[in-house]
Length: 316
Image 1 (cartoon, rainbow, N blue to C red):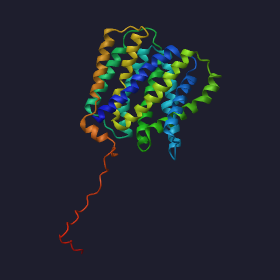
Image 2 (image 1 turned 90 degrees about the vertical axis):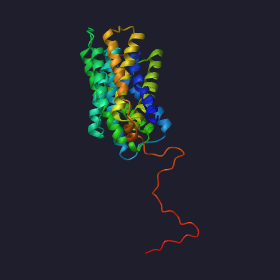
Image 3 (image 1 turned 90 degrees about the horizontal axis):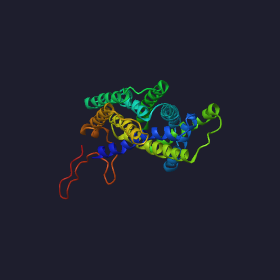
Image 4 (image 1 turned 180 degrees about the vertical axis):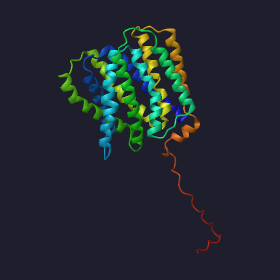
């Protein structure tokens, strides 16, 4: 039951990210990806810092900078560019290759060997992605596809690195440090490359509010919490909900066509997500070993005290 709750909570992140592609493509300025990434990261980091009320200590100054560079600075710019260059459905489905990348990187960095169901789920997901991508649609930007693939690889490595480093710190605090560091790294680069900040319309401000607060502050917090409580392979397969959301939004809101091949691909993607549900052994292995409320931590067994009237054992 505990693992299932974490699965549902973690699934909020890819659904929010799938919607983020459409919001970015439809409402945010296309020619300022650096400012777009910075305006996504900094408000989210500020909100989480206010909630966490903690600052980095020791090695976490350097770790925050590294994770902020990977998971925020580079990733957000690549995703922003891919969202502007590609249709919503294509941009989101390219990112669905990330489960396999996360499994392989988690195997190398945190010794989490993927099981057969996880690998089967990744294969089904990749097959579904191929069916949704190979639709013969003309005008797909090669630069956009490269940006999306690069974003997928950077995020897969950065997320597993965060899983390896973050076991001893609060999830809310570590997420806040990454977002703040990544946003601060972006600002001087944006000013040097793109000049003054862009003027934003009311609709763009509302879009940035969603992108920053929902698709970033909320989504990254639950995603990193899921990585702490679930196997990386399970979390990676939950990322397949990203293209499902992107494709459905592209059809329902943007008026993009949905073919029978894409429907078959969506069905395979959902099967892949179901295969990624953690088994009982995985739930026990990845459950936190911190006693919950009302439970006592295990103690060493003690010798029974002799009852009144019973002879005391002689000491040697």
